[in-house]
Image 1: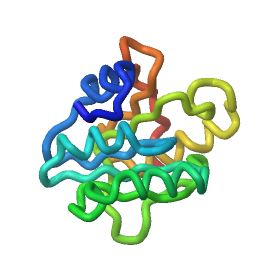
Image 2: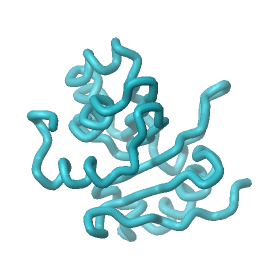
Image 3: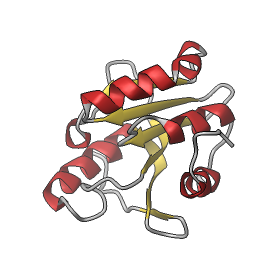
Length: 145
């Protein structure tokens, strides 16, 4: 377990259905603690950590230099309701979010737009997991566009 991971985040990361080669998307990464813990479990996989906040992205990049230089992690500034795969970017196997208002009901309009984006960014059968379960719950995605 990463030293900067709270017990709550450790439970969440432990609950993710990770494989060593998984492509993972963290939505609302903050300073990147969970993303680093996921990156530590990947060998050929990759985690993309996104956040709408420039400060959060800057912190995540600064805190994750080792994981980024190893090619297991990247960070991108983007609001979740605007997220899309970049040209040539492979879709993700798993996406997860912790305390993200657009996905926990606090901002339902942004959430509906974001869900359509994630349906297109995940592989067929890919999963979107958010906190609020034991410790995670699956979020049903709309059909791919």
